Image (tube, rainbow, N blue to C red; front, side, top):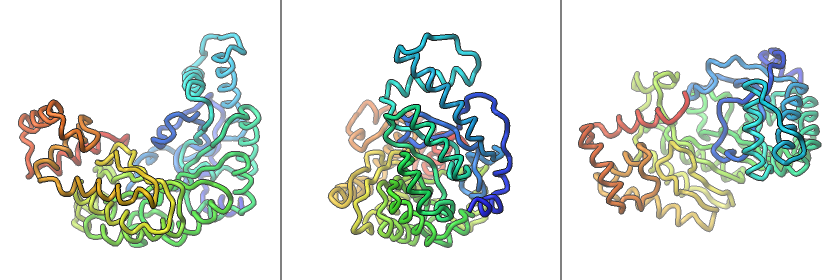
Length: 385
């Protein structure tokens, strides 16, 4: 199994010396209160045309011994904040980051850990098991350890290995499903098929691991919106993930997929059209018990969340409230969201907020002819790419 991973991912050979405690660049919104431990640097795949997070980060896998040194450092600072160790001056930037991380983790209850960067399952299984055992020995109160995971990597791991990970509390995978449409997956160079995504989700859940599937509406442009919504819903219906998280697409010029829109192969949907795609997706979720959450800053309707099936009608009604708004009200809310002034539809009843948005529209000459372009630019500013 390990030899297959090395053959497919030669970057795994790039193991660099220990240079102190490390933090990766990103984490999911749901991991805001988790201890962050960096397992890999960058992304072992790093070919997706819609993602620029790790494009300039050479991929390497950290040694288990180095990650364990990070754990030791966190343990020291945790003991300091719990009065079990005398404090000392932080010796380096990494030491200071570990101190800060430990402080916030203690304040949040010390129950969850997130493994950075992309796909920590690429660490050789015996080494990752060693890290997990060490982490659990240091902090036995941990309830959940989470990581980004690619479906193809999950499918290469033996069920027994996944079960062992779950026993060691690596019990939640964040999987970038993005879409269930094979044509879009191929165009965006995702490196997996719809069927592979289904198999990975089912396999992980069978091992006792929670699955968090990310769905990216808008990725296929107007041309594939309907089919993407239906195909993605079909994947969810077969996997029944524990969580479905919506992450609307942002189209930055430095992304490879930008070429498809510049050349006219795809047409960029606006916020209203993206919400329409999300509605079709939700409407076609059947027989599952997932928690749906629209908790990413790029999403228009942050309040869109609920448990299936009981909250489905309420979520659809919320979407319809937005879609039924007059065009000028949709524009106000869209701009208000992108400016960070509005978070929920009820903010349209707040005259102070409405006046602020209108003032911006007047000063910047924003109207229905340029609102899409303005919102696109504001979305790009919200992500670190």
